Length: 254
Image 1 (spheres, rainbow, N blue to C red):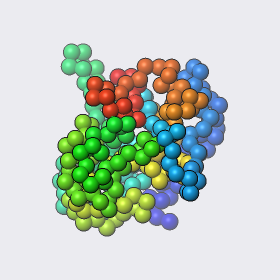
Image 2 (cartoon, helix red, strand yellow):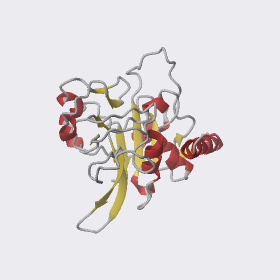
Image 3 (cartoon, rainbow, N blue to C red):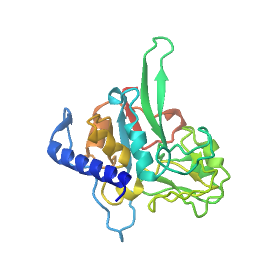
């Protein structure tokens, strides 16, 4: 087992331990954390009965913290720690998730938030894809089929969140569950390999493991889920709601 695997496994163990320890603890008045996700049997198709979503509380997202970004890099084999993309400059390299600073120019108030694929119900990336490589699963996760992506990058231009990257180089340091390839587009997969196994995305796990608790993952369609209860109880924001994309990623505190 290499150092990265050990780190990931350690975080997972810590997360599970802390989750178990906090089961039944109120996230907010009337919102209790009982479970995160349940594994879907491999022979069972993805269902629209589930809408996976992510809620990010910007009040708990510390400036300078990039634990979610680092966790995504380790989990999916891009960025820091990867030996790939050594010839690309910073603007060309993969960026599945990034921290963004938002500042009120009148008051000077500033805060940061993680930005990634928003897993839209009506994804413009899929609308413009000429081959169908960009698609939305019935459970709301938006993905890129690398086998039929031709690298036209129409999807990158269509995405209002600038959440997609293009791979310029031949890659060799890849994770088997997160295939990447030169000449294709990629973005946050919501750690679909983990979600299908009943786990949370790596960014959420890392945020919770470090006791930041700024990220909450779950089924938006399940009224009993912590994320659905929180969204129903408190004001949340869809970034660029004016586009009517109905993203699966929501924010608090903005």
